[in-house]
Length: 370
Image (cartoon, rainbow, N blue to C red; front, side, top):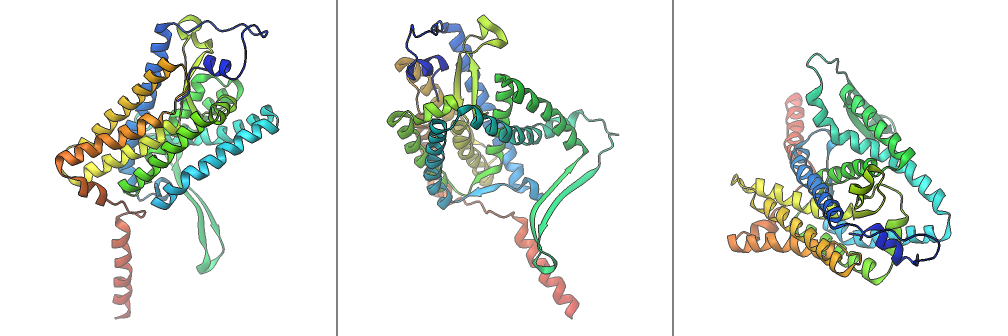
């Protein structure tokens, strides 16, 4: 989590009296509103993304199949993330920031529209009348021919999805033209919810590896260097949630922002979503581990904001979120004697129905032969 943009600016070397008037300090009310809003915005995609991840895991639609993260993926992720972060830092140092952000804006413009459309689609379905002329479509790209034909893209959608895509495009144009913080947050929330919904850890051990690795990553790049703070300030893309601390004074034109990176939402969020699916697998009609980890996230994020406010320095949120999100559920599992069940829980990368389907085909073939 980054400190307010005003602090970041001064930390970057904009000394008082250098020609740019210093911003007035945020009021206690403005800070409380900003940080409270950031916490609320962080909780929404985690909660609803986790709920949607349950139905996503059962989906037979190839366009809604989750991406499963294995222990090998989790071990490599901090290294890949570090290389990407350092690469962006060097790009901003070497090339013009304006042109880089123009390319990134176009890229995230397309991704944001798709993510927001997928996010609002279930909610929008309730507003369509029963007699709405809904037609089904399929976008299919294949490679090769005959028996060697291989599917590259197989996406199914309908007329309602196209309406959602049109509405999302309006937000996309707004973001592209104005870079308004509300449009930024709509895209950021959509990215976060989609990440929690569609990225699935295959077991708790993989989650611990991923969170542990990114714990070290976050601490190093925030405390050890100025790389992450510099990229966060320079990167004009919806990869963070922002909220103005001077909203009460300036309204929607406020520009003194506090911010929270999407990684501090999605990474703990996919672990919390895994614990919800583990709760359901226990078939006890309770969501103990989900609610425990959810409360742990609130505690960790609140502690991050408190420490940041005390020391007036950007804080690596995962420094506080990782111990809380892993430690709290683990203590509950120890108390309930379910540690073995927790770490033996495994999610398959293929749908549960697939094995049954594959068994039916040889049976039908054998009948024809007979």
